[in-house]
Length: 221
Image 1 (tube, rainbow, N blue to C red):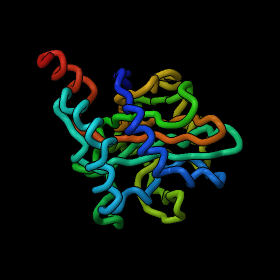
Image 2 (cartoon, rainbow, N blue to C red):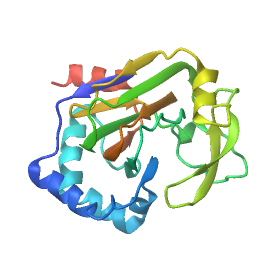
Image 3 (spheres, rainbow, N blue to C red):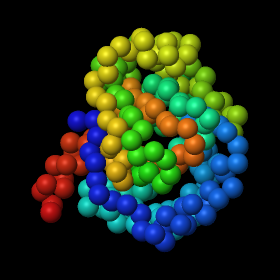
């Protein structure tokens, strides 16, 4: 299973809190990426203790998970044209960047994504035939929207289009999964095609598969 749609949405007060934090962030055009400005200990403390963090944590507890396994992150973009999407596999950054390896402790099986801004019909695509740790993955330098760089594994290809072509036919495509939120599989190759204009997605990393989440919920209603 590649995604599980949920009916969870932030309250009006929590949504306002999140949007107030981003009030001045959409004055420039930039490509889709993780907003690493929110990853500092101070910002994480703010988010996890805010009304936003508390509402999300209460919901995730129903699935035997929470917001504390890893950081609350935000994926942000504001492009003039449609962003095709760069196929990738999620992982925590390696402590030793010189190894460029995917350790199992770095695996992010699932993320819980909540749409705050953006087109709810933006397409998410998965290729199940290339998973976390696949030997075909290559060393690659990534760049955050801040300009900082880091190394991890990536799909072969020098451009987004080349990576799409290398991967071939997708395993799963969804274009209405964030109405308003969903658990999404992130330990296989995936990407999001983003519409032009402001887009803001809150994401919580979860160390469980979607099937494990479903099974727990089914046995603990």
